Length: 131
Length: 387
View 1 (cartoon, rainbow over the protein chains, first blue to last red):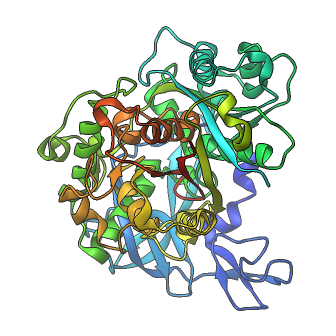
View 2 (cartoon, rainbow over the protein chains, first blue to last red):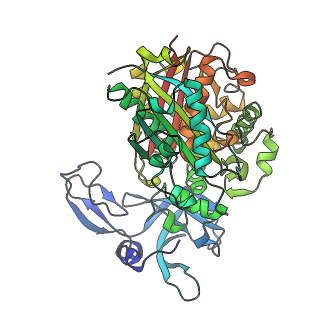
View 3 (cartoon, rainbow over the protein chains, first blue to last red):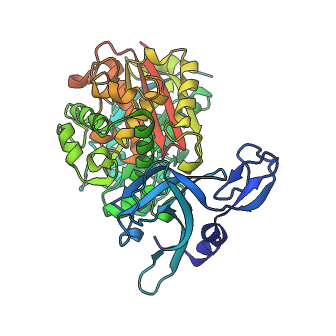
């Protein structure tokens, strides 16, 4: 599915730099950032937080039947990463030759995710690299 | 609050229905339900229609008014309910509320999806809308991918095996063979499932429910006047629903669907029954791992115990509890908007004793469980005979 450039632009801060937020009322950290804290509701007080990107693999899979937009990337690893600083994050696990395993250590990296055709937009995103 | 009964049910055959569009499917199921309830089109006061992604599949929105239009329900209020794959179950709950409240007497609940007019990858994208667009779909995470992440963790925590998951598909195909409405009337072996193409490990093609066309409809009426329409009305003992985070990684636990647990607990309380009282249940097996989760989260088995029980045959037809006698989403097919309504139709047939070759002996209490997305919506209904 093609996306508008404005819809990409809005999320750049979070997607490029792993910027989420933390509720100062209850100290719960969130990535991706939330407008309202799930625990505090209207009492939430959200402050921006950049995560350092260290974490471990909580679960993972290798996607072999991709959506159209990712047909040139398949197969690729997707994981749920438990960040050291709290939140669980879904993302690509970079295939660097280290076979992913539950509990394996990873670190977030800034990477190209895919290119929309020959003249389309280039999408960048965080991805997790096994250490 | 009034008691509510189902007085008529109707279904189309599920599968690749090349000769039928959205309208034909709606009309086929709707007319069958009206016939079953002996009500005329003019008796119907309100319609709720469950459809998930008709806009993406066939370019048609506004499907509830269309359904009312096609069935000759002149000018009645009609509301479309979209709750991803739980659209049908959610529509049923809205119909129940409309009758229970006393606002309407005869209400039709329909569900429909026409999915095979698009390519498989377009269908995958349409269904992906049930997850978090910005943080899941955007990264190329598919629905099989989300359930694969759940399955992998379930295997890690509870020792669940791929063969045990495969046994869910084998059981549901066995049941589907006995259902004239089912998409796959063909039995499978564990070995065939294991050897099918890997979609997103550990899930293989035959762990996944198919892309299907189909529609289902039920007619609801107040229990006190239900005999006017049908000799064996089926009482809805409970109607419960819960939601959860759309994004899988936000969940408290990856190996359970909390929305299912909450809806089930609420439903058992309303119906004053426990999981042990359920004789027959239609659960949401969009993937084989999903049936394992359902059996645990509905409280029928303890967490981590369902996979072995299913592989041992405890949930086969006329086992300890009969699960997905219709063939489930896996065997009967999964036209997403229709599924939740089809589940109710199957339970009605079971409780009336009209399920023919797949009849559960002495079925008294039945249940349906319909899930949206990777668990952001769950709807549970409990039923019994009221004659």
